[in-house]
Amino acid sequence: MLMEISEVIGKEKISVLVEYTSDDIIGPTLFAMLNKIRETYREDALIIITDFLDTLPICRYHAELIGVRTEVIDKSAIIKVGGKINSGNVLYKIPISSYPVYKTLYEETLEKVLESVDTHRGFFVNVQIGIENLMNIFEKKELIEQIHDIGEYIVTKNKDIRDLVFINVESLRNTSIEVLSLLRTIFPVVVKLMNNGRSFVVEKSVLPSLRGSVGTIW
Image 1: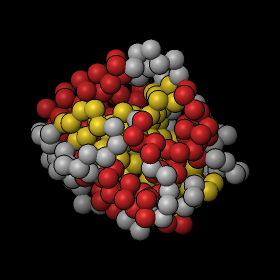
Image 2: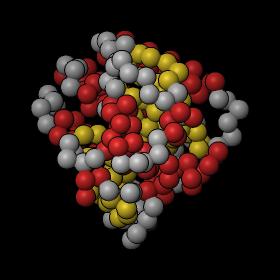
Image 3: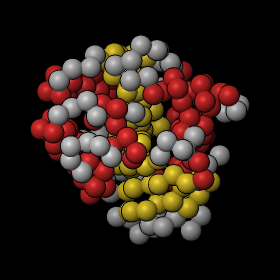
C-alpha cells in the first residue's frame, strides 16, 4: 500500500525506528520528512529534535546542496548532545559524559522543553538523529541500561509524544551487544529507508494498516 511518510506518525504516542545505512543520503530525507510533517499537521505538531554529535548540521548541509528547504529546524526546539556546531533553534546543550550522568541531564532537559510549551494543545514529534554515535561510546553495561531506558520511555509516556529515531545500522555492527535487534523488538514500528533514502518501507508494525506500506520521501 502506498502512503505518505507523515502518516507513519499518525497514531497517538507512536514510536518509529527509522533504519538507514551510510549509503543513504539522510540529509534530504530528514528535512523532506520534517517538511511533510509540518505541511500535514501544521501547528498541531511541535517538533523537538535531539542532535547527537553534530549530525543535524551535516544533514542540513547535504539537504541545502540539492535545494531541500531546511528552515523548519529554525522553528523547532533543538537539544544538542555533544558537538560544537549550532544549527537551528538550539535551546539546550548537554555534554558527552558517562551514561548515568547523560541520562539525568537528558531527562531533565527534555522535561524543561516540554514545560516551556505546556500551552501547546497538539502533539509533539520527538526526532533523534545520530544517537548511534553515542551508543558506540558506552560500555556494554551502560549500553544495556540505555536500551532498557529507551523501552521504558516508550511505554510510559504521559503526553502525546510521537518518536522518530534515526539509526545508522552500519554504525552499530561493532557494538558490544545486539543493539539493533533489541531496538527492533522494542519499537512498535520499524521503517527502512531505500533508494538512497528517497523512499521507505514499513518493515514492522503492530498496526496492520501500516505493515508493508511503501512510499516516496523526496
